[in-house]
Length: 426
Image (cartoon, rainbow, N blue to C red):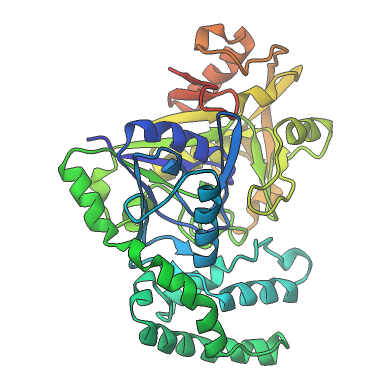
């Protein structure tokens, strides 16, 4: 039995989807354990691009079972659209292939309305850059004990009662603070009812499914969304997501014991990107940043927003390593760096007159650090079709080995392109 957790170690968009898709070949269950459809995982298989927001990335392997855990917040309309989109590609999903925890919280229409109204109400630097998908308000209801859970779909009368209860406070906000029309229970119920009926057959006890697999010595692959530094507790607060993105959440977000999490793979993009607002010490607002943005096709899979780009930041990665305890790194999009004469790595920060090797913990302190760089020679060769580490240019090998040495962790998977076959194993 080999339980594997895949997490993003930067601000998301590291290429987790591709790595999960590859690892799925040797897995039996694939479990999504946190986040919502504010995450987008892009896969390229046989030249065709697939983008998933809720369905685990392993779904393209038709013999595998995918689970959506209790730590996820699920928009039923988005999930049904994903299922229908895959059906058009002759990839059919039934309750044997996709199962949803009855404890998974549901994103309701009023969550999305509240999310958008709240962001529009803010101004300037107060804007978080939310995707407006209702993620935060759904997690808020979860903590306030008024959330709608997938299991509620089994009892429509109970579902309607919970909707009515959840709307009491929200309608006061809509009417008196945000100056928009209150929402009726009946309208929301009619919107959600067809999706509820459709998804009931997919509901299951995800904890039990995982336990059975582990008892049979099967491999369970846990898939995270977003990145470590968007974690609600450990990220660059307040510019973070609304869930815990670190490896430990694989246990709480799926109902599995932490003792079963044996292999943890940290996905590291060969440079750094960030979508939306928030501090970004190594951001390149120059020709090199534009080069990375264009060559790396750095646009958000969910929003289409242009990603901010910059050099690899080892200070951020050191924090990720101590938070997640990974056993190895998968380095992605290494091919994008090809063509640069010089490549910089941020090895430390200058902060308040001192050199520091981990991020300062105070809110927005990252806005006041100065990166300290080590400069390495770049390479001209296109590496996207190379199959082994020894085939890589010496400067490329040096870049990889420098990262390993400075972080003291092995890089075992190297992605040199979006396709499954564009992967080097060490």
